[in-house]
Length: 201
Image (cartoon, rainbow, N blue to C red; front, top):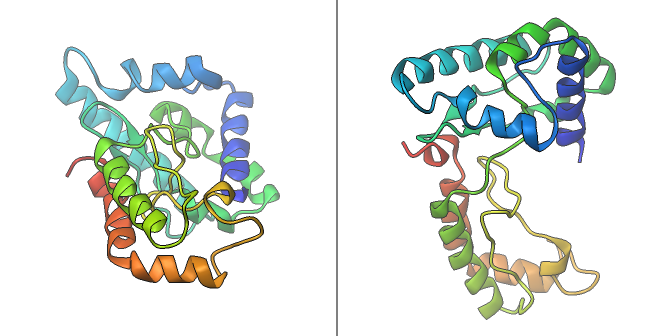
């Protein structure tokens, strides 16, 4: 998927630039979701500092070609939620340049633009209701989501190939029928994936 490929390139550029604030793999991500996210003593001040650092990093991305990139939001427990869709407009050469120019800001924010925290309970619950409706309307293999299910902020949990009949896609009549029948619940799932909702606002 292009979004995560480009985000990975941005993160790789930060690591190559020697910014210790951003790690790679589980260890770095764990650090970013605990001490780096303003948890613990002085959480209010640290949270404000983290929000400012995330804004500065997002502003750097915007100024250097990632147009319409929304500031990531900080959840109540220090999670960072990012709408990554704007990264689809960036090719590899641009990503390499941006990763170099914005390395300091990304490192200071301890932020991987392409990584999302686990899906919050409210989003999972909305997805379960939508999945049940899809099963009841002709898609019996449609799986219930879990906290580990991938999602896109502002776009919901989406569909996986294994949720659909063999060879089907979103344009297949049976899938279109289920989507129309479940439109209200699918829209509720999408609303639950909005950045402000993910952050508990």
